[in-house]
Amino acid sequence: MLDVILKNGQIFDGSGKDPVIGNIGIKDGIIVEIGKEDLKDAIEVIDVSGLAISPGFVDMHTHSDFTLMVNGRAESQVHQGVTTEVVGQCGISCAPANNDLDIRQMAIGYCDNSHELGWKTFGEYLSALESNKLGVNVAAFVGHGAVHNKVLGNELRAPNNDEVIKMSEIISDSLDQGAAGFSSGLEYWPGNLATSQNLVSMCKKVSEKNKIYATHVRNRDDHYDLGFTEALTTARQSGVRLQISHIQPKYGAPKYAVEHTLKMIDSFRKLGVDVAFDIIPHTWNHTRVLSILPQWAQEGGTTSVIKRLKNSEERKKIRANPQPMWLLVRDNKWDDIVLIHSNKNPDLIGITFSEIGNLRNQDPYDAAFDLLIEEGEDMGNLLWSSKAFREEDIIMCLQQPECAVISDTTALAPYGVLKNNIGSISGYGWAARFFQNYVNEKKVLTLTEAIRRITSLPAERLGLIKRGKLKKSYYADICIFDSQKIKNNSDLKNLKAYPSGIEHVLVNGIFSVKNGKRTELDGGNVLREFY
Image 1 (cartoon, rainbow, N blue to C red):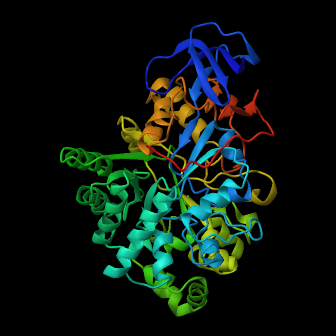
Image 2: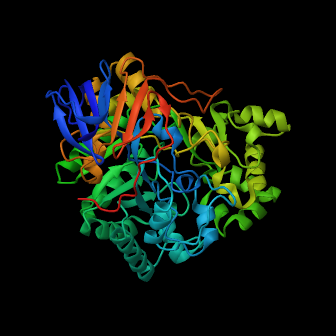
């Protein structure tokens, strides 16, 4: 007898093939029957006529490394049909670490006294994650920033040859312990200290393990071509499989940047480089407020940063930086920048920095500095978002068949310890918005192709075993939704609204969402093995 039969649904298997009306039989978390054959003998039979049956969505770029420790139910993701998350992106991971303070300073979404720490190796981190009930499957990348910190601490310099060897060994060990790949964030401290040759040496270890290298490139505005060329050259020299994270250029890049970048990618492919990329399906760009500081201002950890920010002369030097990470800041576009997370000032979340400056009777730049000081040791969790991407660039990227779609957010919940956390402007609605905006409204992609972009495409890129498609013997990670009614309901006034149109979500055959409602069940696993 089967556990579950899904009857009469429009089956999109995730491969990009045309859908068929049929039935799916599930036993012990595995798809054992799929097709037009009538299935009757099951503990539970659900008629899903008129609905799309899709593989569960694979979000291949998130920052839920710590929030899943705090609340593993991943409410904001499961409600959208996400069944697998890939954490540890942009060079930011919770392991390896020297001590608990390292974890606290690296972890996006860190909450005091919310989870016992204590891990040091990547394998220990995965084991700690496994101790939680998880609403989604989780694969994890090891981040360059964490590895750098493990070896060099907060020193303001690139590693020497011996240290590069040590960092490479840690990366290799982390991959053996279950890391799905290696990531870098070259706009961030300490990624911006890494030299290209350092990265080649490290990526050779990744290539040896046949894992993937995902990079947040060094620049996506004025010097976008240097940033993307560095990533492509690193892959060419090391032989690693390259994933360019959230490829769309940001405010300050010329209008032809995407077209030029795609041509560069094509030329490197002709040289044998294995490269793909992904995009965030909206025009908002988010990051740590701390990232706006120049390299020298971040040396020495939070205590040193706070000391500098309290010094008026040091503030002037920071503000004089001609190339901050966001050129919006240089150009005083404070109306386009919104605070999205603060532990100490949650009442300011969702407000522009122009408004924050007015409320505090100070310049918005000084307001940002003061908010960092007020966060103290947790200043790494002060997040903001800006209107930095162009819709035309997103559409051009989506027209490329190798372009995956990601959230670049964190798994959250509108209750408990995480209730004030906001991972991004569309953290609660990115997947729904992707279908609503680019399939139903703008018709950039067909529904069949859109499903492929967030199911089999990322699953195959990552090497997930028996996930990303609806096939016999595959894990029953499934999303069932109304393709015409799927809708993002979150906005600046209500950042924590769940989407409409998601009827059922199964993770490893377990109903996480049923009849549009979240169940008490969690079926996710930590994924350590890849092909």
